[in-house]
Image (cartoon, rainbow, N blue to C red; front, side):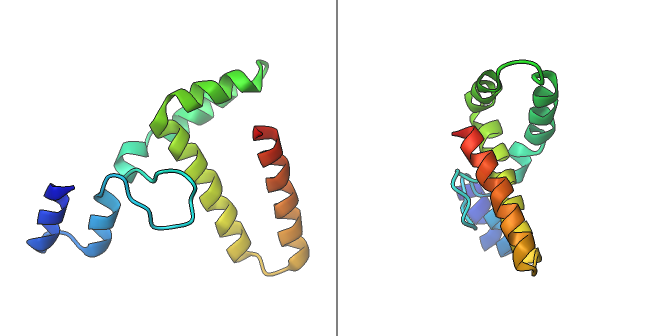
Amino acid sequence: NEFVHSLRLEDLISHRERDLLLVPYTLSKVSVVQWPPFLLASKIPIALDMAKDFKKRDDSELFNKIKDDDYMYSAVIECYETLREIFFELLEDKDDKVAIKQICDKVESSIG
């Protein structure tokens, strides 16, 4: 982080770039530690491949495997929570928001 701050002090990177590079950082309402994107870039595709391979197995085994990798767990949760917020912000129709909320509630109850 000191190196990243020094880059900003030398005006080699912008404030936004500094915020994205700091380890860890928090810029939103996401419930997990938000690691810099370059640490998480490959984690979502890997998690999707794992989920595809675990279709016929117990979901708890998949969840535990994802949770064993702190970066992957953070990436999956951050992706889900960010997409949920984007949907709620983009949708204007109340019925659409209710439908998305019901889907999210089912997903979260399944995770629980």
